[in-house]
Structure formats: structure tokens, C-alpha cells
Length: 178
Image 1 (cartoon, rainbow, N blue to C red):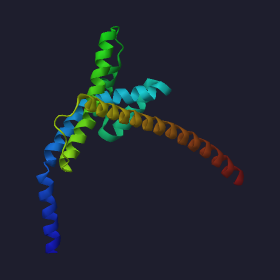
Image 2: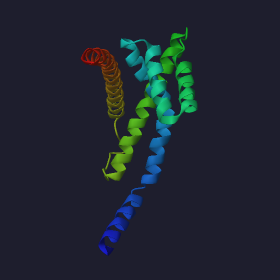
Image 3: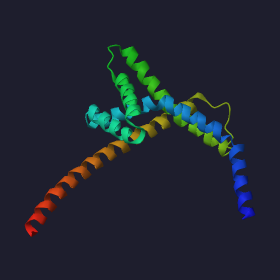
Image 4: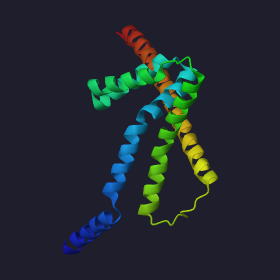
């Protein structure tokens, strides 16, 4: 039993040696800043197939069950404000660029944190094109997440239709047996 306690204490010391509290706080900070951008990008991906309002409604109902009504409505307000059309092309380009930069910043910060925890030595003179390719990869990951959310919505709709069909037909079948 004593060896187990020493083992746990050793793991806790290694945990603290990696500055995990600081790293997790920085990832959480970037996530909060990037959340509106991530959600707008994902809503637009899903909205390309379905109506954007349907996607926003589904997201709001999912968030309501996770974080409560007030918080979900706050996020919904942020999404609506970010989704407003602007007449200025310059404003659109700057807005989209800012959203993409903030959204990919989460994954960049996560990569830096994991590199520190795993004690990977990164060249401090990283070329600018490497940073851009890392951001493009992060954006690709965001697109994959949007695609997975789209697949999730489609599967939920199919399951709902199948559930309704089964309920109707089972009720008819059971009614015939009685």
C-alpha cells in the first residue's frame, strides 16, 4: 500500500513539474476566445448543406442540455452577432481572417503545450511558412470537426425518422395482435 502512495505522489510531482496547470489554463483561455469563431465556422459548414438557422437551433438545444439555458442563449447571441452580413468586403475579409486565426490558435496552443509536456525541442527559429502550414493543418482539423458535426446531425435525423416509423408500425402491428 505504501508503494502505491509513493507511486501516486511521484505522478503528482511529475504533473506539477510539467506546469500542467498553467498549460491547461492557457488552452482554456484560447478556447474561450476561439469558441465563437469555431462555432461560426462549423455552423457555416453545416449551413452549407442544411439551413444555417436549423444548425444554429440544433447547436443551441445541444448546448442548453450541456451548459444551461442562459449560457446557451448567450452563445446563440454571439453566433447571431457574428453571422450578420456586412456590406463591406473589407470587413468580411478581416472578420473571417480573425475568426480563422483565433480558431486555429487553440490548436496551436494545444500543440505547444503538448510539446512542452512531452519535452520536445522545437527550433526557436521556425520559418514563417512552417507556422502557416501548421495553421492550415489546424484549420483542416476544424473542417473535419464541422464535417463530423454534419454527419452527427444527419444520423440524428435518420434515427429520428426511423424511430417515428418504428413507433407507428409497431403500434399498428400490436393493434392487430390485440
